Length: 175
Image 1 (cartoon, rainbow, N blue to C red):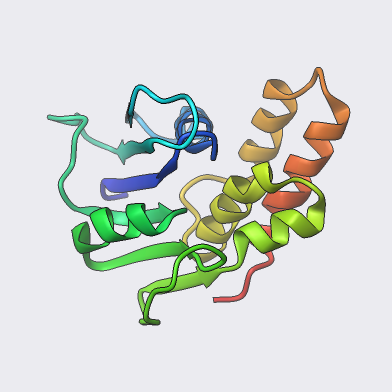
Image 2: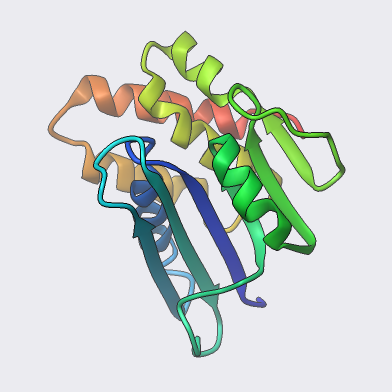
């Protein structure tokens, strides 16, 4: 396995940091070296938010990367800022409910916000995006994500059910 540099970006309140924690924790059993590097503004909701996760078989010299193999982009501001940092051969998962972006072979357009609305909670758009990313490139086993969601959200069965449904919805996304 080579190192995989993953960026998730959007705005505060979209669960970007939660996605990074979820992905990093899911990789603990299968990846020897992992970094998790969140970045967000002072605002709780609405400000820019991003998270970098690097998964590597070797020691990682820096938790910060300037080029990425995989991206989840939730807002137009995130796409504008980070899409140029997509490495050649990389893949960007784009929330096309909010972002108008030209199609390209390395961009998967996902109507995540619209699908989340259909599921009854816009807050699960992040998990639709993660599922879509994993449908395109399996970075960790989906079963690990399911298990961690059950652990993280065990106190609220309705929220857990919505999040599991959203992740599955993303996994079913066709590229």
